[in-house]
Image (cartoon, rainbow, N blue to C red; front, side, top):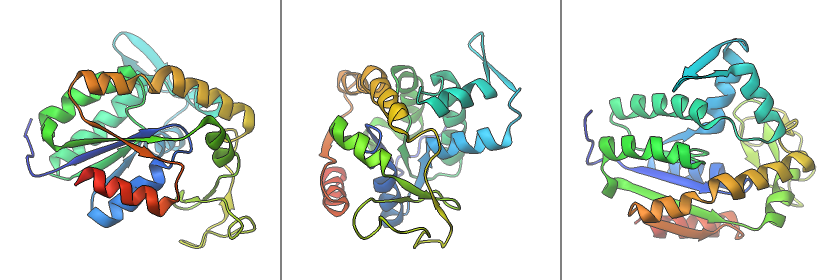
Length: 234
């Protein structure tokens, strides 16, 4: 594998609704980095693969249809399944010599243990920045239950007085919709539990393996969070 010493990787993680996708999108526009978003990688797979297709990984089978059902109910998609898809994308980006921002993966110890060694080999540990967006469970529930996204490019539209009656995305003109199943209150509670049990322990992994984790207050306005992120990665 080739080591791209001039390229960078930024990893953003946090609870559902912490603004990972929003901030990664802003960074992508400002820095010119590719945004590697696990939710879009998964959605593409779920829409284009046969639901009966089976991925055999480390001696275990993962059926696409079964992964779709987990995803709909708020249970994290099986880490080996996600990891295979993400590593494929990571290697494509590295092959093109691109810097990129990751959001949505790694999000379990399995994923982080599989993905980070590859990223270090390809880009060098000194070129990897890790950002942790911190928000409360109450904020997670509110943001996700009020979230709207556009059908075309999956933009998230922030919930406030100015946007509560919007039905058309101001960025691309497509219809604004709720994410069916994924953002209903009961599913959100499952997602919070999954986050606390399976994603939050990654902080300890990063710290033990000498990756500096920059903690960002995700409760702020988007512009203030972004300002803090820019300061953290400089």
